Image (cartoon, rainbow, N blue to C red):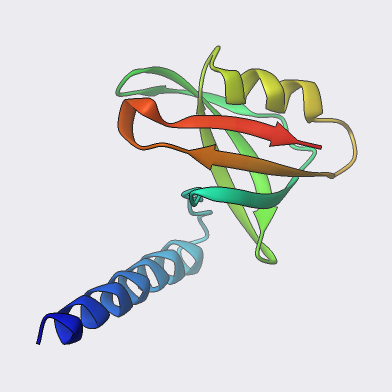
Length: 113
């Protein structure tokens, strides 16, 4: 019984995320990418990042491509990931891999070029 609920729960999470992404794209928006734990290959697009107010201070929003779709990637202004993406961005698309590990406040990121 527990396995059935666990399997359903995982499938439902995927379905909800796909539906949310579809709705955002249909309205002409670009959804945010939630990085998975481990390696996340992305293409950093040559679009000027935007700065927006976030819950924990300014957020710098980069436009990326992953899984053959465009996404937005939010970083904390002045954080390690922000600094590394600033170093990586150029006038041409740049392929990088973002490593993510940890959860909550213990989440860490590192870019492999």
